[in-house]
Image 1 (tube, one colour):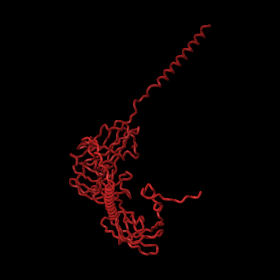
Image 2 (cartoon, rainbow, N blue to C red):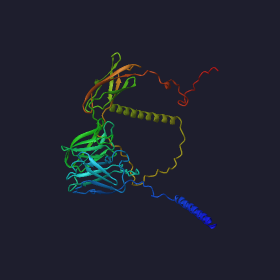
Image 3 (cartoon, rainbow, N blue to C red):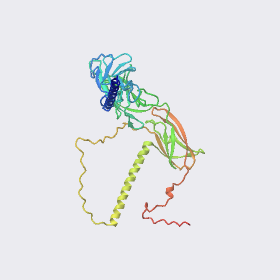
Image 4 (tube, rainbow, N blue to C red):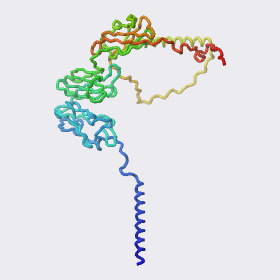
Length: 438
C-alpha cells in the first residue's frame, strides 16, 4: 500500500522528462534551413509552342505557348495579358486566354486564314507569380500555306517637328480593300520591318502611341501613306499632329529693343513662302512700327551660327597677334627640349568606336518661329500688337492671328554700373573710396 503512490509519482516524473526532451528536440529542429530550396528569381521560360515556329501548312485551332511555371494573369507593367501579344495579320481583336502555365491565342472571328504567314510577337513583361518578368521580346512565325510570304515593308519613323527618331512607334499596314492589318513595333531607332506581307495596296500608318492601346487617338502624332507593294517597299514616316486648325501666334518675346521672336502654336507649311509682308507690328496708338528684316527660325539660326564662327576666327587671330607681340617684347631663353611622353594606350582590336550620329529625317523640320528686326526701337513699358496673316499649316489650312505684348521697363543692369575690380582688370588702378564717418 505504501509503494503504490511512489510508483505513480515516478511515472509522472518520467512523463515530464519525456515532454521536456520532446520540446527541446522540436525547438532544435526549427533552427534548420527553411523548406522549399533557394528563392526563384528566373523569368518564365518557354518550353514549347504549337504549332512550332517556322511551321508550314499549319491548321491550328489555337496557338499554345507552354511555360516552365505558372504565369501571372497580370503583366509586370500592368494592363491585360493580351496587351503583351501582337498578332500579325489580324482582322479585329485577338483572344488571349490564361491557362496557368499555358497561354492560348486565336483570332476572335474568322479563325486562322488559309495561305497566310502569321507573326506573333511576345512583348517584354510576361511574369510568374513571384513577379519575375521576361525583359526580352520573342517572335513566333508559322504559315497556313506551303511557304512564308517573302515580301516586306520597311522604313523609319521620325517626329518631324522635333527632328528626331521615334523609338517603339506602332506601325500598321492595312490591306485595301479588305482591311486585313499587318502590324509591328519599331526598334529603339525608329526602324521597322513588317515581314511576310503579300503583294497588294496598303494604307501604311505610323503612330507615336502614347497610351500603348494600338489605336490612333485624337491629338496623337502620326503619319500615313498609301503604298503599292510588289516585292519590298521602304518608306520614311514623318509623324506630326494632324490638326484642322491653321497656325497662330502663341508667344511674342522681345529679345532687345529692335528684335522680336514670334513663336507659332503649329508648324508652318513647307511650301508656303512666308515673308515680312504677312506680319505687322502696331503700337497702342495704332502707329505702325516698320519691319526692317524678317527671318524664319532656320535662317535665323544659320545666321547666328555663321556670326559665331566669324567671331571665333577674329578672336583667335587677335589672340595670336597679342601673344606674338608679347613674345617680341619679352624674349625668353630657349626652352629645354620636351620630355618623352608615353603614347596613350591603343584601342584593343575588335572594339569599334561608335561614331554613328543619330538618324535624322531626310526633310528638315518645319518652321515653328520667326524673328522680326524692327526699323525703330520699341518704347519701354509699352504695349504692342503683332499680327500674322494667312499662315498655312502642314495640312494647308490657313489662319490669321494676332498677339499683344508689353515691353519691359528700360533699366540698366546692376553689373554695368559696377566699376571693374582688380581681379577682372589687373592693370586698372585701385579704386579709392572716401572714408566713412564713424
